[in-house]
Image 1 (cartoon, rainbow, N blue to C red):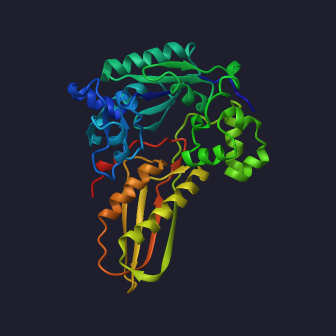
Image 2: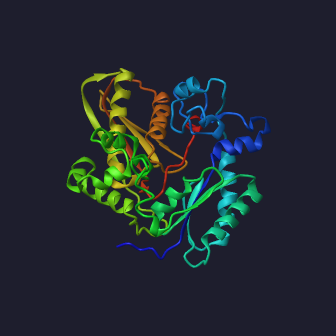
Image 3: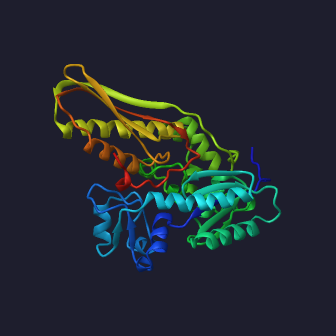
Amino acid sequence: MLKTDRKIIHFDIDAFFASVEQLDHPEYRGKPLIVGGDSDRSVVSTCSYEARKYGVRSAMSIVVAKKLCPHGIYVYGNMKRYSEISHQIFECIESAFDIVQRVSIDEAYIDVSDYEDPIEIAKQIKQKVNALTGLTISVGISYNKFLAKLASDWNKPDGIFEIKPEQIPDLLLPLPIIKIHGLGKKTCEKLNRIGIFTISDLYQYPSELLNNIIGESWAKEIIDRIHGIDDRPVREYSERKSYGKETTLEVDTDDRELLFSILEKYLIRIQKRLDELSLMPRTLTIKVKYYDFEQFTRSHSLEYNTNDFSILKAALVNMFDHLILEKPVRLIGLSFSNLEDADYKQFNILESGFKY
């Protein structure tokens, strides 16, 4: 059922980590800045808008980023500092509004249905954040969460955009499907291969065929959203679960390259499954059993829940690099736990910032 009587705001701090670095280091301002470190195995956590002009994007390999922007400034970043700024902003927002759902370190939904003019509210939020921190935010407004998030990305940086009921579906039809929050890169590539590039293409594609490609429940949810239907309330959700895979090897081995390739394969499978379940992990656990049946586990918890493959892989790489194998391995496994509902968007956790 299409509900259009709500007023939902989604705000996103513009290029958050990079903007904090430029705030703290005036010499970085106006220059292409990439946060994520300079190791070949690092990934871009975020980058300034100056760097984006060269094609640098979040979750991109640092190696690729350096090819696109060799003269850029590459920094590891300071998660403690980013958390401090985030805390200041959310403390301010949550003191002013009753219903606020944090979805990451740099974004949130606010239910402003009880307010007359959401545009004016958005302006006030932007002014408060800028006065408090010197940072800019982009704000999206609509009658549901999906459209509000889409709107916040419409007029970046430092913009306000509202999507109204009468603009649906016409406003959405020309958009590429990658703009649909929840559709990952690999799913979009799969849809591209069958001729679905835009939301308009998705509108015209038979739903029963789409079910076979991305699953019936997920297909229904996506179709509802592009028709402007999304009844999810602005609220927190805290159910915890776990999911994992393990295998007993045909031959005991101490080949680290082989063992990592198995973990990477499991990472791909588990992440795909969690996407289907609309869940995001916070904790990764590697399980190892030696040839003599002695076993151990190593776990690492991210600062925040995320379903971003590149960030999960970066965490896995870091864990495996620090994993000491004393004997040939008989069994290896990977599991994710501390899962949250995928309303909570991934946080851009610095691969370079993991501590062991």
